[in-house]
Image 1 (cartoon, rainbow, N blue to C red):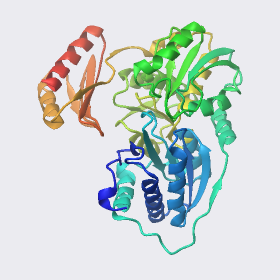
Image 2: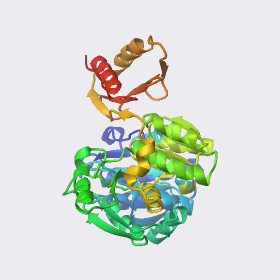
Image 3: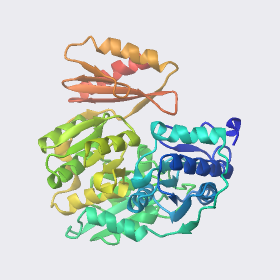
Image 4: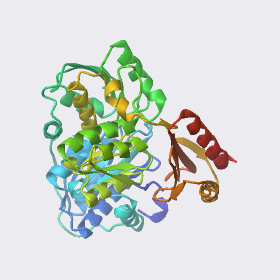
Length: 454
């Protein structure tokens, strides 16, 4: 493709854009060709595994990508419909690079490509995506060599077997579980997983439909959780599970119909992993609750703070040997899942913890709820650099305050903290605040927002 015809859709962690206008079959072919060229330079295995979500455009785009890759001599294994974590499983199990066609939680008019090296190792902006983009922009010539071979392989049963080998749910008490798949890939994988559990499952929006007729498959937006909350209360369920469009993220609703803070689930899984792996390293991203590091320390583990973003966490897990990592956005990473994120594996940990206990989910999670949090507050800005400088100047003069720049600006005090960082994709500043009391939370939040929006 010529440079002028390549859309600006290479993001920090993946490729994502509008179908027809930006992500077209021609573009997907060019990316397949460029990815094959990149893998050859990296001395990666000569086969790529490809998965696709339920969006109407995914099969055609995956077909074009496969044609591009095989044109460059790569063999291809198509696993068909898959959640993103199922693609990571295939990449890890087969030890080959992978490509997943999904736009995750984005609306129906979008699609995208997530790429990884063999063993589900991440490819982000700094670890190969810029090179692949350059190859697409410069145009990758089709070499005079034998065409690669494409074949199909079903890996659903292997995927479920592996998940259930990592979390023992064989002896859990009978549970009533409501699952909202949001018409996404959870509707494909959840029946395969939960049919093997001692549970009654109430299904919400399991029909695969990439137009998302009921609500967006984005559990981060509170309005998309309302149907699940109502269904948990109506059915007197023990737990509710919500998956995003490609099912690599999981959110919980407790028996009271309340949405669970993802940091609480991070703490719960970290506690369980530290029982299996005493003294292990646990990673948490810097907008997770301060309680996560406290829980890890109390469990005898070592908490390691990370930047936001899956490629950073996966790299840090590989570097430190961490057994688990959690992000406040609902991504959960496991060493025994090739350091990749799996919403389904996180869900199984929550279900196992609940099924092994006589307590309710809210009782189990109560020890982890130590602070008041703002949630992420976005503000449109024109000059983020000068705003961050002004915030730092204001707060760095205060007694007992520490400042760091691991990801944006983090300001830490004994009873509160906040982080402000720029969006990778939009002209936004994202603010997260946490404090020991609600009054202090409100005071800090208002002061920082005043500086951002003035």
